[in-house]
Structures are given as C-alpha cells and as structure tokens.
Length: 337
Image (cartoon, rainbow, N blue to C red; front, top):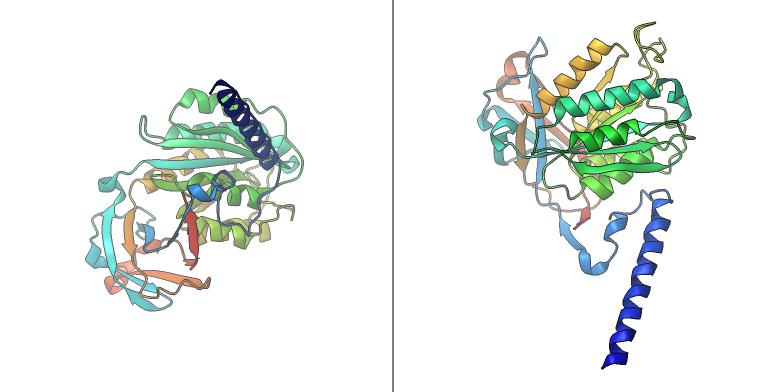
C-alpha cells in the first residue's frame, strides 16, 4: 500500500503544477470574444449549460429636472421585446430588494492617459468610497493597457482597494479597452450573486488594439446583466484639474463610450472638473439604489442567437418622465457556473 500512496502524491503534485502553468499562460493571453465561458471554468465537470429563462431589467426613471422618481408600481410599466408585449413576472425596487452590488472598476493606464494617472487614481478611490456600502457591497479593481490586470478581486475592504489603486506608478502600452470589458464581464461578473455594475475610468480610445469590438463589449455586458457607467478623462476645463486637458466631447470616441453605456442601461459622464466628478459619483451611487427591478420571461423561447430589442414604457406616456434601461440582448444559450 505504501508505494501506491507515494505514486498518488507524485501524481497530485504533477497535476497541480500543470494547472498552475496553464493558469499563468491564460493570464498572459487576450480574451477571445467568441468564447461563452470564463477561462476559470473550462472543466466540463464544473459547467452547466442553461437557457436564459428570464430577462432582468434595472430601470431608472427621472423627471423633467433629471431627478430620480420613486413610488411607481408594476402597473405603471409596459415591456416590449421586438415590439411584442411581455408579461412582468417580478417587480421590486432596488431599495426594497437591497441586493449586494458587485462593482468592477476598470481604470485605463494606457499611454493616452499618462498625464492623467493621478487624476484617475483619485477618481477611482473617490468613486469606491462613495458607492460602497460597508459589509455589503463588493468592489474589484482592474487596470488595462497592453495587459489586463486584476489588481484587487471583489472585496468590501477599502484599505485593500486604496492600496491597489495607489500601487500603480506608471502607464503601460496600448489600450485593450474592449477586451478588458469583455474579459471582466465574462470571468468575474457572469456569476456574481448580486447586482452587476461596471465603472470604467478612461478616455474611451481603444485604438483598435482589442480583439473584441464595441459590439462585443455591449453584447457581453447585456448577456451578463451588467450595467456600464463611464467617467471620461478626455475632456476637462482648462486649468481646473492638473493633467486633464481641455477639449470638446461628442467626437466618435465619445459617441462610442455613450453607446456602450446607453445600450446597457448606464450613463457616461464627460468632465474633468473635480466638483462635477464628485456629483457624478454621488449620482451613480444614488441611481444604483433607486432603480426599479423588472423581470420578464420572453414569449419568444427560440434561442437562435439573434438580437432582441427591448423597450420599456410607462402607462400613459409617464407625464414627461424618462426611462433608462438596457436596449436589448442576444438570444443565446449561456454557460454559467
């Protein structure tokens, strides 16, 4: 029996070593947008293929003064998928449901933001301190340039997040912006047991270095039920913030950043003014805790990979109220843990 025991130990060590080598190799490679499972879930014995039975919609409602509107009921909402009416199967408010937030903060450390690195770090820390609820919400911190680096996995410990953010000393090369979104949504947010939110701090310029495209980034965010918010570092008021250049917004890069957020139900903020940024942090945090959560089961149960368009309306046009939620999703079978 003793020789068998030794062989078993040697075999276990060999398997562990091969697994470590494989994991390190995967960390150094770009994500493949064609895949549907995370790289940490490759073992066939650990995955389960399921149909997307329900569609979850966090919905933000604002009035003419852009103030958040509360107090609406399920009877106030109508949902349409590809212009066909859908039945709401569950309805609550974020405040009453109070699920934990899983927030990924992705910070651009490419050459294009080299002069704004300190500004980005302070923005990241200020946002994390504003949005996180102690002992409940979780934040992960990632940087992206020519590499996508998980600096701090999901945690509610502000000291660990502060240390991770301030450990960055210099920018990298290139910009894997869309790859970073795709990889983080697929590997970290797909199975997060709570509301899934992504906040990107960037100038929005991918420079065509990613294998993933804007469409891929939107697709993976929609399929993992992730709402994307963006804090743009490109624009700013001259002299107001050191390292932030003055400039105009609404060029193609800005429009792509807005599209990414709009299609996933979030919003993009374009400012380099410190006071305006603090207001943006507070607004995002407030919005995440005042949304309506609607769920419906699509009447079209054919998961054929086609794009589905979603429209949410208020009964009676809502008397000037505005709605914001994700615009659609691609009907596929997803692989989850």
